[in-house]
Image 1 (cartoon, helix red, strand yellow):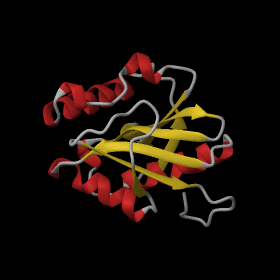
Image 2: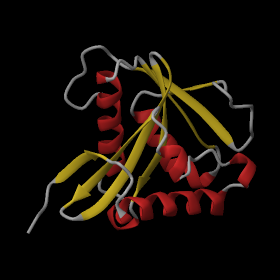
Image 3: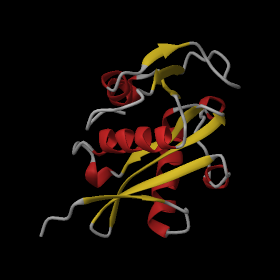
Length: 164
């Protein structure tokens, strides 16, 4: 039986979501020195400025993603992670598109992100590049870091079916 993908606003109380967030943090810490890890922990993801979404296939969590509003019309993408069992199925792109739509509906006009600069983050950078993100200097409270790259993109006012 094939299950369709369901995206939901997540309150972070479910064990499956908490587990995927924990795996995300562990993965970041395994590949990056702690001073260069900018992933939000569970408490930070529960801040009112953050909207978290989870993607489900049947009753299995497939992906998680969030955005954090940092002023009236700008937000930062946070905690993008696809569960290992669902890698390579386009779920990272599906979550990215969903986050873009939700951000636009919240009045966000541009999205920003920080991701790793090393080889472990090539797939993430390619995903963001293919979705129209361009490299930019550090933003907000970020400082230059050789292990980080920064990207941004404007959100078009009326997107096409697969646009952010």
